[in-house]
Length: 253
Image (cartoon, rainbow, N blue to C red; front, side):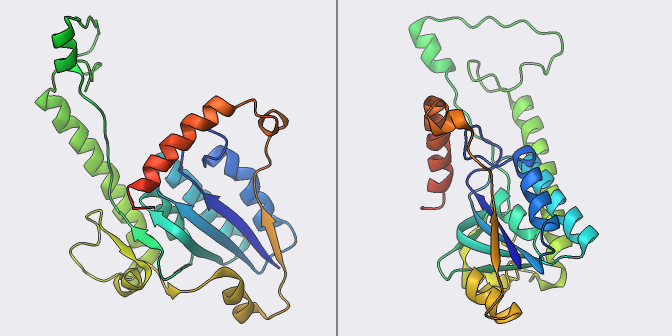
């Protein structure tokens, strides 16, 4: 039996469809421990999100894979980019469709600056802090070069963690292409040439070729709460849907 876990959507964002370590933990436990699977297959379709949640989810996958000696095979659908690729790299092998988008091994922080608009409207911002960096990057104040430098250092440190994870997981499969870790994205065949994935492959035929035509599949996923089924979280889900669409749009999807 092959256990299938679907990892779809933005990582760590609010809303019913988001992925985070807390909601996925019981799903992974069931997938790896129930019915003695010969492998766990991950269906991955994610544009990324929280680096911390990506790391926690990936680490949980690896702990169970090592403890139970079960191979983990990742299958990318539309996209495995940024945090989505972090999850894919937790698998022992990564396969994708010809048109799958792979990569974006980088870190991004985005916000708005509203200080000029406030000045035009005659609105004054009043903030009082204890600690000179407590109000770092306040969008209602002019940008402070020292704050920008601190943020860039944080992003560089997170990026270094991401690169270490990819190198640890992919090892000698990776090429030395200078663009590998600059946030670039590629379609699957080019990603395979770079060593980011094994190649082109789809879940069911790939698993049947490996374990026989009679191999069984069992899916594991989160169940919707009763309130969610009756639309009790419509507003929250609408906001999360907008955030997620914006995340996918970065990759033309």
